[in-house]
Image (tube, rainbow, N blue to C red):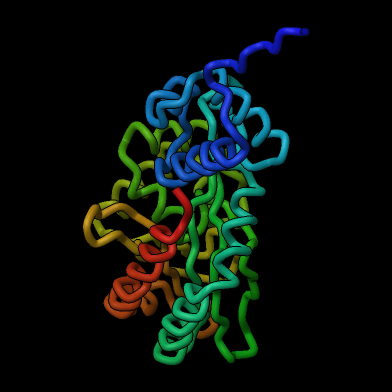
Length: 273
């Protein structure tokens, strides 16, 4: 009779493999920064060899990616575009979207301008939900679309809320593409702007992404930890409002952000561990 080779010590049934893969995705989503293989293995208590196979499988399917630094060196593992698409699809089919749209719709009714909720997705801003103004002159964007970090109100907000080490690393690898005549394409000038915005607790776009459009964003924070979960922004054409006009709406934006935070927290808590 032929001997059966024993299973490797890190072998696991299919359900355990699925749970481990979900644990990897959850760790990357909650961490807010790339992780090395060693860091992930230590955090999840998964053997490196097992984890490497999981990462390779997830990477093949686009759920994770390896993030390069400004010199092309591997900075670590982060969520990939397919993970963001999956999360967006899940959100669009649950009570989160209904609650979120209700808050945004009320805000648009009060402010009269387009409002949106965005999330940081790697080196870009991901549109999670958006309610358009009824005004004929507007910039239409759809949930699932991505925009740059360096020249949008939400993007600059996310950057301004990072610690110095994380922000410097992000700026080092971003391409500061010139979108309009107002776009900040010098790293030092942008860094100085982010320092000012960090103190003010807002993000601004003064015709830096699209000429003739201004925007202001505020953070949506977890009440317990203070972690930035998302950004809430209002957009308007300069034909109807100035940046100063939008800055006056910050108290209303912050009030709406406080109502969105529990929805985001509940949605996050409902994800499998």
